[in-house]
Amino acid sequence: MRFSEEFAAALYQVLKDDLPKEEIQQLIEKPKHAEHGDLAFPCFSLAKIQRMAPQSIAEQLSRAVQSPLFEKVEAAGGYVNAFLDKKYVTKLVLEEVMAKKEQYGTLHIGKGEVIAIDMSSPNIAKPFSMGHLRSTVIGQSLALLLAKGGYRPVKINHLGDWGTQFGKLIAAYKKWGDEQKVKEQPIKELLALYVKFHDEAERNPELEAQGRQWFKRLEDGDQEAVVLWEWFREESLKDFSRIYQLLNIEFDSYAGEAFYNDKMDRIVRRLEEKGLLTESEQAQVVLLAEEELPPCLIKKSDGATLYATRDLAAAFYRKETYHFAKSLYVVGGEQRLHFKQLTSVLRRMGESWADDLIHIPFGMMRKDGKKMSTRKGQVVLLEEVLQESIALAKKNIELKNPGLANKEEVARQVGVGAIVFNDLKNYRLNNIDFSLEDILRFEGETGPYVQYTHARACSILRKAGFHAEEKRTIVLSGEKEWEAVSLMMSFPEAIEKAINDFDPSRIAKHTIQLAQAFNKYYAEVKVLEEDEQQLSRLAFVSAVAQLLKEGLALLGIEAPDEM
RNA sequence: GCGCCUUUAGCUCAGCAGGAUAGAGCAGCAGCCUCCUAAGCUGCAGGUCAGAGGUUCAAAUCCUCUAAGGCGCGCCA
Image 1 (tube, rainbow, N blue to C red):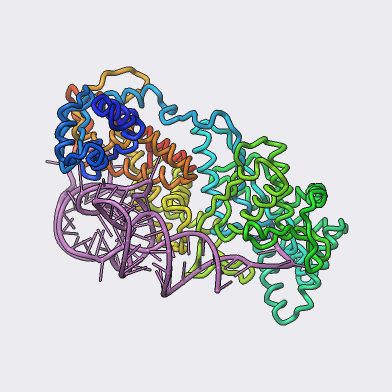
Image 2: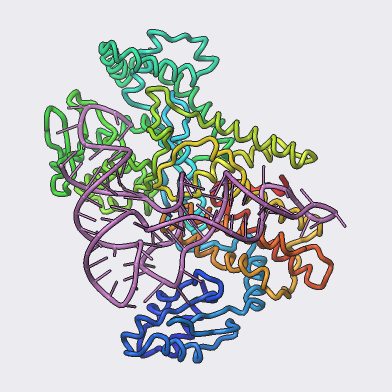
């Protein structure tokens, strides 16, 4: 934030001999309480250097620091507290937001580098569950944030479209399947078959063998198996695309696991050439004892490939295709070990970019304290939750704003926004216990709350016939606006932090705070009061609306002008 | 057994490259719509920051140990 740089510069003028500028900058903090001003400099570490009481150092500094930016600089409890000139800074900030428009907060830290993002990755022939939502929305938000930061994200949907589970599914279909039923309700029917297979397999272990057999046939290109696999895949994709449409998400690539079927030999050969493969219990592994990791399984004892093999092939393919600077994997935390192994193997292969693979883990979505399991049929279907949320949004609209023009579309935006926001507002690594009640809450710290705040702001602007294009001079004391203005000031900083920590929740929190600040303002100040400051207040409202919309947009959430 | 993650108000969580009095939301209670959308606002109440040591002028924040919960640990992905 440039105001803190100003403060640091002013302090540096006095402290030249004792502290470098960077260190001063680092020490500067934002006070928790408004009575301590907007910027604070603690003098405790200086007290050691100068061998003086922090209080008296603060006294001296506060007298020495001067800048038109500050209306007051005072010493308190060993701190130098600087109070920004609200009138002047409000004017500066609002004019900047209005001038830069959507470009406000845009950063150039990415320098056009490509960032690959492995995200969403639902499993074919299984329903899109609440569990997949996290990877999808976190990945989407990271992509948006990275783009805002000057990177070029490439979104890859690494579909789970290969593996033993398809053998099982084919076996189940051959045994109990009904073509007509599958055609009518593909995912539902396929899931039922899958669950039934696991049910029966508990009593009849013979089934497992049949499943493996069918998968082998599939891998060998057996016509019957391939046709069924393609059919299942097709139907699943149709299903998924409905959900992605609701969420308003698109991908740059749908290259799933099957895509790498013919790309693994090469990798295995390379591992062999480099002498990294070891036979162990009839399987081929890369030993990682030095890294204190368990061995990474490359080939099963029957010669079949595994997850790790596939991911290695994918890593190479992505490097060669996209020339990424970083390759992100938005995948649950339970796969930490796998990604450590992946990186280690690449490093052993001598790939300089091994450490550019970054696992972005997240906590689990659980139900009643337990992991959701597809096999046991204990899944909550995302689409059902989405529809329920949209229906509730619709109900609210009918209740509160029955005259609204495009109810269906707004209900979708709000209903979906509630779900996405609910997922992104908390720190990635927290486990989430699925609660329909929490998700369908539209009050408090929720997506609809922010959307509502935005709609209110838009409503004022509409009534006033405000046009953001017109240049205008801001004349506000900035007192009532201050909290919001202060947040607008730190918006670019929030984006940078979100990018550096791969943490969308930073933006969610910042946006919530701005909405809260504005709602307070709204309750206190009549914007449309006809006086000489009305235009300035409208400019303020317009800036708030813009940043609320932008904040939501960075989370992948739409912001209707009216709701 | 080993490794990783988590533990802050009744519930869900912020706050963590150490800094001043630990903050929100929900739930509870009490208020606010002749006024720009009450999906809102105001107030009250609610805390040994899991526990014990340590480092420091200063620890919810860093280190060590303990406890509880979760997730991993070779032929699933």
